[in-house]
Length: 150
Image 1 (cartoon, helix red, strand yellow):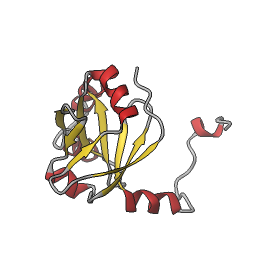
Image 2 (cartoon, rainbow, N blue to C red):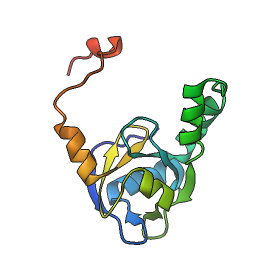
Image 3 (cartoon, rainbow, N blue to C red):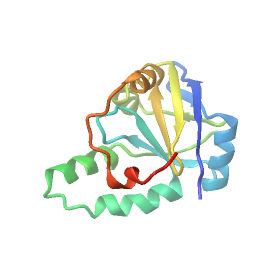
Image 4 (tube, one colour):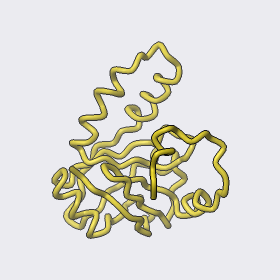
């Protein structure tokens, strides 16, 4: 089971390549031999989701099984499945982010790689810090969070 935690400031070159930090790279090597799937986040937050291949293979059938006659389910399928890009870390621990995904998430040179337990998120640095600075949340707290004590 993967355990990706923490945030990492990284850079992407002009060709769309980025080097995965050594600590994360070790976790990916252990979890999936460096094989990952990069896809669009379906939320309004324009970031990318990075799944170790085994985690993606658990999630993918669940997405495929959603009722595609439902508009919200169809949107989720199109975003996640339609943008899924299987890839493997090269010998230098880098990946090449496809132009469509770079455009979707507004990725330029400065990025943030955010651990989320079983997956990672890839954000533009500017959008990440803007998200952190948002002071309010318009959504109701789900019951699962009401019982959480930090």
